[in-house]
Amino acid sequence: MTPPKKPEPLTFDMGALNTKAPVVHQTSAGGVAYKKEGGETLVAIVSVGEYNRWQLPKGLIEKGEEPSTAAIRETCEEAGIEGELEAALDKIDYWYVGEHEGKQVRFHKIVHFFLLKFRSGDVSKHDSEVNEARWVPIREAVQMLTFKSERNVMEKAAAVLASTA
Image 1: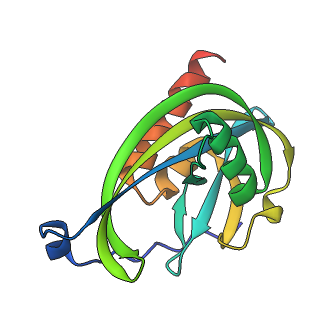
Image 2: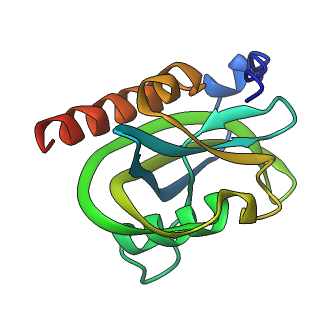
Image 3: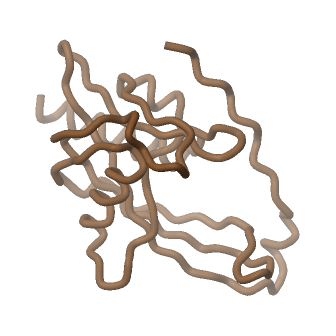
């Protein structure tokens, strides 16, 4: 297995966070999909963007969709695998600056994360917005994830799985 390339730091206009730029609210859901293999717990993570940021599979919740259903769907789309819902893990929120309908805006995103037990699929069957999806040992995943909030979610998943072992 090739060691992951360290992601470039994210850059954006910090001033835009302090201005009156319009705010776009988004709600997403994602999953910590796991499987046991050879006595080890593996989790599926994905690499996205031009800097190959390692993160948990997640995406926007569709109108009328439950967060847990969206987490299962997004994990399937982004990581190529189907998971069975086991537990709610955490809800995180963060801000970032980007473009929306041709204008610079501040995004406020809330993400619901769920623990999913692997049922079927293949990480090589991820969708085109993902550079790579792979199974990694859970402790290694904590180190690989780009964002602290997602590392915290992974730590919570590890604690839940350890308490049920």
